[in-house]
Length: 246
Image (cartoon, rainbow, N blue to C red):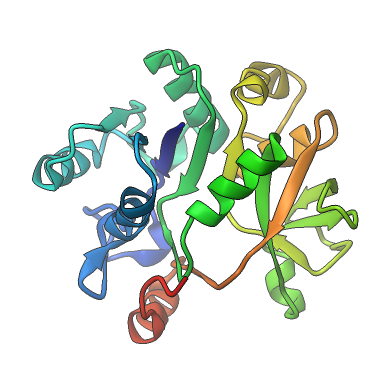
C-alpha cells in the first residue's frame, strides 16, 4: 500500500498563518497535522510508503520536515503549481503522482488538513476485508454543513449507491470525509474519469464517479474528524483535540 497525502492547496482562508507556510505543517498540540496522520499509521501498519504531494511554493517546507522526520519511506512530490489560481486540483495531483512515481499498488489517499481521533488503520483493515475501494462516512445533522460536503447514499451492506459533492439538495445526512482507499485496479481508471468529465478539484469527485462504475463500500467512522478550514476551526481544534483515542 502507498499513502498519498494531498498537500498542494494554498489555504487562503487561513491567511496570514498560511500565506508563506503550508497548512499540513501547522501544529495541533505537540505535533503537526502531518505528524498526527503519519505517526498513527506508522505505529500500527508496517511497510507503508508515503508521498506528500505539494505545490512548488511549499515543497521546500515539506522537504525540510521530511528530512527532520528521518523516515526513508517518505517522499515529497512537487506538482509544479505556484499559485492558488493555477493549482492542478486533487484528482490531477493523484494521477500525476501515480504516473511520476510509476505506482502500481493500492492507495490510501488522505487530505493533509484534517485530524482524526481514531486510527486510520480501521479504514485500511475494512478495505482489505471488503477487497474493494472504500470511503468513510459519518452522520451530519447540520444542514449547512451538508451543503459543503460529499454526501453518500448507502445500502444495508455499506455499498455506496450514490455520492454527490456539495449538492444544493443533499440526499442523505451521510457525509464523506477526504480519506479514501483505492484498489490498484480502480486507481488505473483515473484517466477515464478525467476524460469523462469527473471534477478534478475536490478529491471526493473521484469517489463519486467511481461508485457508479465499481463496487465501493463506506465504513461508518468509529470517531470524529476535525477539519481545519479557517482560523476559527483551527483555534477550535487546538482547544478540543485530544489525540487518537481508538
